[in-house]
Length: 227
Image 1: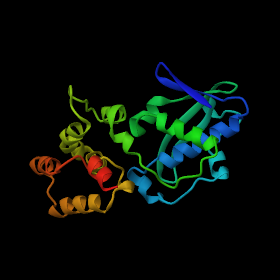
Image 2 (image 1 turned 135 degrees about the horizontal axis):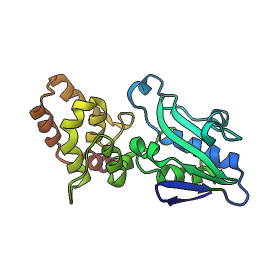
Image 3 (image 1 turned 90 degrees about the vertical axis):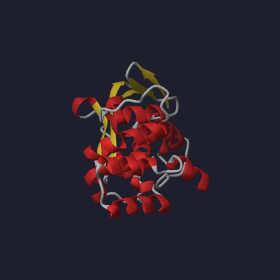
Image 4 (image 1 turned 30 degrees about the vertical axis):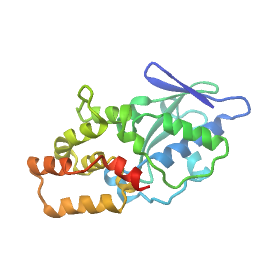
């Protein structure tokens, strides 16, 4: 399997010795592994769930389904997958980048994980998705909320600056952006900080700004140092 970005979308190609079913199944598994819950998805999310071949195959249509879709993954067991792939030709597929990027950032980590699975990598129950809170992925996701990065603004400064405004739109998602991690990946210190903030029960703008500015460093860097 190899992929390339052509204009706005990623195109995926199978290689010699691979079948369409194998490649599509690997993509489904990779998408599921790296997907995180959002909103009501938390009701069905289980951190330790591994996706089986049978479960993955239920997300695949051979031949293509409605609209030529080969993979149709919106929410799967509470995880926000947003992975829609259509067939272009035999052995050639196209990922809908916009649907994916607005919620999950750049698709390259997911596609690279699919390649690892094709090469025999063992399943992972849950792994870090910190990349969706950094760089181009951060820009793409926050653009959906109407926020754009200022010139020379770092990831951490960007996340701090938009926190009060995003909190008014979506409290849970705002806290995830500020912490630089899905709630499913927060460590005990992250949980304690957010709990302390919640117990104060203050959501006026100045309190939100004060909370965001009160961190000694980017939580992403602090977690990295601890680990």
